[in-house]
Amino acid sequence: MVHSSLSSSSTIDQQQKQPTAISIRNFYNGKSIFLTGGSGFIGKVLIEKLLYSCPEIERIYLLIRPSRDGKSPQQRLEEEVIKSRVFTFRNKAFDFSKLVAVNGDMTKPRLGLSDSDYQTLIENVSIVFHSAATVRFHGPLKKFVTQNIHGTESVMKLSRDMKKLQTVVYVSTAYANCNLIDVEEKVYPLADDIESLINKIINEDSDEAPSDGHPSLMGRPNSYTISKAIAECLVASKYSDLPVVICRPSIVSHAYREPAEGWCDSLNGVAGALLLGGLGIARTMEMRCDYISDIIPVDFVANSLIVIGYHSSLYPEKRPKVIHITSGHKNPISWAQILNYSRMAAVKNPSVKMVRPIAQNPISAGSFVGRVNHRLTMFFSHILFAYIFDFILLICRQKRVMVDVTNKMHRALEVLKHFTNHQWFFRNDNYSKIFQSLPDDEKHCYQSNVEAIDWTCYCNALWMGSRRYLINEDDSTLKDGIRRHKILKLAYGLLDLFIYTIILSIFGYIISLLMQPNITIG
Image (cartoon, rainbow, N blue to C red; front, side, top):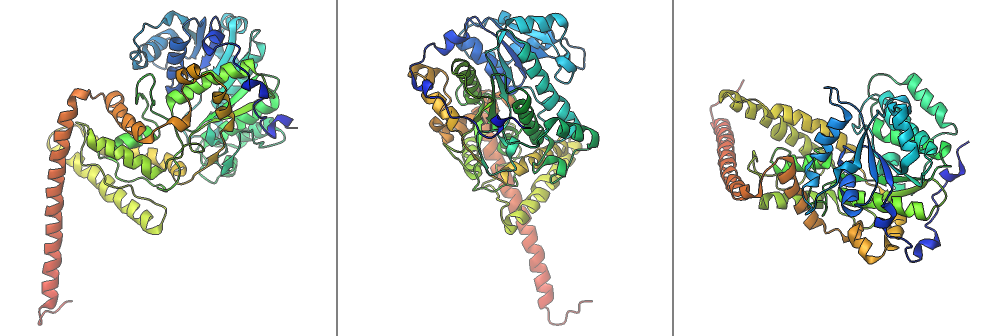
């Protein structure tokens, strides 16, 4: 039977309204943390903020597997984490000796840990942040079971053995239950026997990715979201004795303030789509422009996780607790607004890599006319343009890239399609209450109040961050970008005039032929 904690998530206890007994910084002092997914987007920002705001933390153990090209976990820690630009913005030196690479693998039994590493973790770790996951949305469900479900269970088993354990913070996704519209902060049961469900998936699943609507997805659009839902149920049904908090961020994107405005190192999801739009490559997305885009800055996610780890340790409640880290409930913004604000930012500070002027208005695919417009724009402004562009590069003896970029863009936009054509109401009262219970200085240090987000400023930071950190353009090139944008607008304006002139000339010629009195057709 599914544990009773599945039915609902308890409200924040009244004791949280009392004055804070210990500061967040002092709480983490002297404690050791175990982190999975530390080399990922959220993981790096979380590490940076922990080292910055809690400098007396004892250790952060990072689960890292050797790379396929033979790099050891220690090499990957140094190259992918320590050398990341995320640590270059503060006016202080970080103590990287506190970061310890632990050789392991989420897909292996017991996380592939050696006996000595396992012993070290269970003897020293107090807080667990589990954020590792296969983030590719599509693929055979078996693969997602291995990492997102079995990997999560291995983390829970390890946590159960930890002698100093205070909290396990499991980073899931707000879209684990995207088959619903109104999503509460609770675990939704999928089956009476979750183990039988997992075994059924393993035995029946093919080596191909299930398509949208496949029974195994249970109303979800892809393997990623259903695997997260199953993992949540597994945690709730088998590990409710552990102090687990399930955190569900929505669409995680560029930083709002920390470690720097607009910082991002991932082209996944919305970040890549908006960048390609700012470069003039993406001209249309299939979306409902009036629907809410539930975007959350990555620093808000990292700050929330730190606060949640602290609060849930001091104020334990019925487990597992579910907390949404989302923006749409408290500070909504539509897809049209996001695109328009981002477009204005890109026009104001254009890239020197821009290939053509930015599309003036987003195309909504919410109507028949919108869908037709979207398909025509995809063909003429994406596909046909890409082949013409590469043909010109071929003539100039340059490497052809646009067709490949366009194909990758279409695959990414196809993944996003479900999320830009639906909207959800994610209730997030739990974190709001936790945040409001903090003293003012800690609210400032761990800013994660989504009502404080100025979306116009954020979209400007988002574009400038993409420019600086994703395509490595220094601000000194802004004047060159403006000059390039003007030249492209003039060039494409003349090209449009030339094309329209040819079309009108052809139509004029045909009409003149038809109006000749003695002409015979056929």
